[in-house]
Length: 334
Image (cartoon, rainbow, N blue to C red; front, side, top):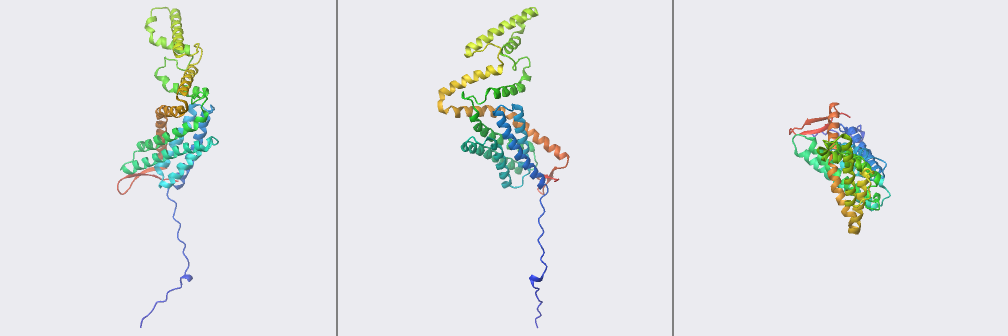
């Protein structure tokens, strides 16, 4: 005789709720980094607009943008899934262009598209670099991300800056150019401290005369040397004004005289090229700023490395080995 074991009624059994999967380690730390990156993207957009309007100096704006790129690179290194990075990059781009609202949707969307595409390209290149290496080297990873993201933001920034260009076609107003010139002189002035680049035209000419012809006046008394230098400098200024077709007396600052020369030159180009001038000048401006911007990229890279080393010392980040002995980065706290 077959014995059957009664099957209990499933409805009478206590229902056990499935346990909720715990959040991955470092979830809130990574979320905080991503939120901070989005906020800094907005701050970078504000800084860029403030510089174009002449309210901020070059160093102030560049510092905010460099910090944004440095923090954004953390998300690239630690984000576990691609869709999450796409969302964060989209939010970063939107936060940046938000401060340029009102300049026309076509212009804003074109700039945003450049920023988004190049940032994603940098992310993908950085993630591929990490996946192909057995040992992690942060510097090339961050360089790929930051370099390409900077290129996209530079193209987008140039597009957004067009409405701020004066009627002459010069991409910067005189106040912004002074800030840019002083910042640039501050970087290169240490190489030639005897040349007074941040002074009047006459003082610059005198410093050049002293540098190039110091031996010619060595046997003269000091007061005679000074007079000869002034005479040679006045002659230099007069000849320069004539050859460059500029109305300068020597009392103008070098930045203002240089701005007048550039404005006259660019106005001539604008008359020659007509409607195609904006595109040609934007390309030339991009080439110049991309070379100069390498400094900002390297500053951002070393900020990222420095922050990583600092936070690693507090145990927030760590490098561990997988079964394949390939190193990966994880967040060890938070």
